[in-house]
Image 1 (cartoon, rainbow, N blue to C red):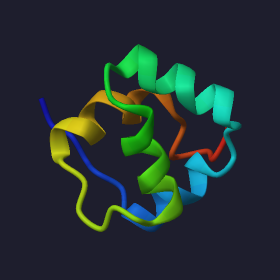
Image 2: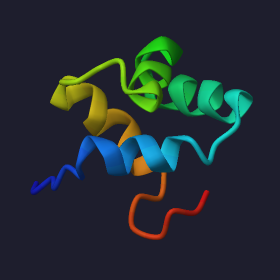
Image 3: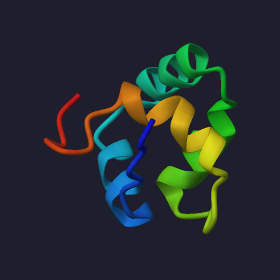
Image 4: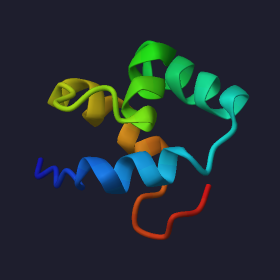
Length: 67
């Protein structure tokens, strides 16, 4: 399956549109730590693992920037 990964600034920008409780729910649904998602949002993870991204990116809307 092909998986196009958006740029980190684009991912962080979209993550900033979500509240902390929403991010916690995304982390729970994706099976990744909240801290991993929150650090990407803050720009503190310059090179997140592709497996982490693969798990949670389908749960957020990168293309439209909407929740």
